[in-house]
Structure formats: C-alpha cells, structure tokens
Length: 337
Image 1: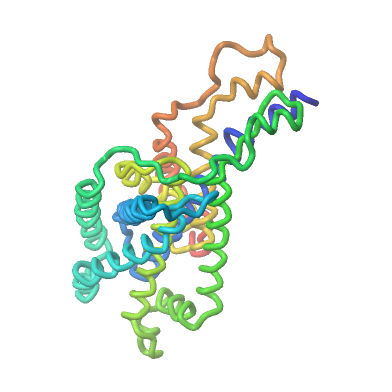
Image 2: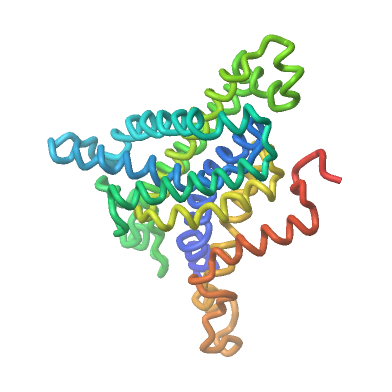
C-alpha cells in the first residue's frame, strides 16, 4: 500500500498539480482569445504579447511597491500591483483597437486581414516590451513559497515521496476559478453580457435591436485584456517572467481554444486543461512512478519519457493539427459537423 501511496503522491507532485495550474493559466488565455473571436471575429495573434505587456506592467509596479516597503506578506506583492497592470493593459488594448483594428473593422475587412494585422501588432508590442524590460528572467513571487512542504508532508505521512504545493499554485487555481465564475455570471446575467452574446450571434440584428456595437467592442477588449493580464501574471508567479516565453504561449492557447471550439467559452476552459495535461504527461519521466507500481526486474534504465521537455510546445502543435484535420470546428462546438 505504501508503494501505491508513494506513486500517487509522485503523480500529484509532478503531474496533476502542475498540469492543473498550467491548465488554469491556459484556460484564462484561451477565454480571452475566444471572446475576441466571438465578438470581433478574428484570431488575435497578439494575445500572447498582451499577456506579456500586462505582466511587465505588473512587475514594474511590483518593484515600485517593494522599493517603498509596501508588501502583502505572506502573499506575493504582484497581487497588489495586479489591478494597475490590468488597468494599463486595458488602456493599451483600447488604444490599439482605436488606432489599428477599428479602421479594418469599419471597412469590414476579411478575418484573414485582421489576423495579419494582429501579427504586426504582436511584433510591435514584442519590441516595446523587450525595449522596456529586456529579455532576462524576472521573478514576481516574493511571498511565502510553500503551503505544503515536501519535508513536512513526509514527516506527517511517513511516506518516501513528499508533496510540495506552492502558494502560487493555490493562488492560480483560486483566482482562475473566481475569474471564470465572474465572467460566466457577467455574460449570462447582466444586460451588457447578454448584449455581447447577441452581438456575437448576429451583429446586424443586434444593431437593429439598439445594441451599441462600439460599446460591445469596448467591453470585449476590457475583458480580453483583463484575462490576458491575469493569465500572464499567474504564469509569471508560477514560473518566471521572460517575454519570449509569452510569445510561445500563443500556440498552446490557440490549441486550447480550437480544441473546445473557437468562440465557445466552456470549450476554451476544457481545451486549456486538455492541452496542459497532454504537455505535462507526455514530457514527464515515469521511471520513478513505475518503480513503485511494477516489479524492479520489469523496468530498465530508460526514463520512460515519451518526448523531451524541449519539445513540449510540439504537443500543442500536434493537437492543433489533429483537431483541424478531424474536427475543424472543435470537439465541443455544437455547430461542428
């Protein structure tokens, strides 16, 4: 029984908890992408850089607060700076829409044109972020590191394997759950949320019903920028902030959105967890796990790892390609054929 318990704790420590945390971060990012696609009808490739910009702003405010001795121990100071990061990112998003996207929307340009424009916005934002803060790894977390320590868990249970749960992992799960709950409440139970859903279903009919298109677009950008900043900060707290990584996160975020069906909020959340668990499970070494569940003479010196962690984003790419070939509308989209 001890061997099975050790095996379970090992999976919790290195697979289930990290994948759940990562899934929350991807789900928030995918929700932002899905909202923009539903309402504005284009794939925003600059979403990763929006996450990066929001995280950078939060980090700069965090440094300012720390320099003045303003912290919220045992929590990370970045949580105190998060509202400022969200506010600035919302302003940047609205400014970008006014200066760039509104022109193409007024001309009713094809979605592919807006997609290409978003790539241009991505490159500009990428350059701005790197110019301001550089390309080095930055740490956001200055709070209590562990809620459950490996040593304390081993002492308490007598097991060989220790369970270590970081405070940032708990924060990610709690904040992601609260944000998703608030978003769904807003979309389903408020007048503005219902207007957004009506606009997403039929833009022309919504306009004839008296729904302000510009107001809907503004609220959509506010929500997308908020979700992007929250996802970026939570990812930075859980790991670290390095601008280039956020550009790479666009692939798993889009894979998550497409798995669940572009424009489907529930699908975006489920897709986020599918992508996260796939990436973590396929790059995890099961050598120690098998050592607990099978006889020693059945195993070899192999790591029992399907792919190297260097290729974890390839998992998202494969998932993306498979979904686009098998079910282009997403597995959870009721309009899929």
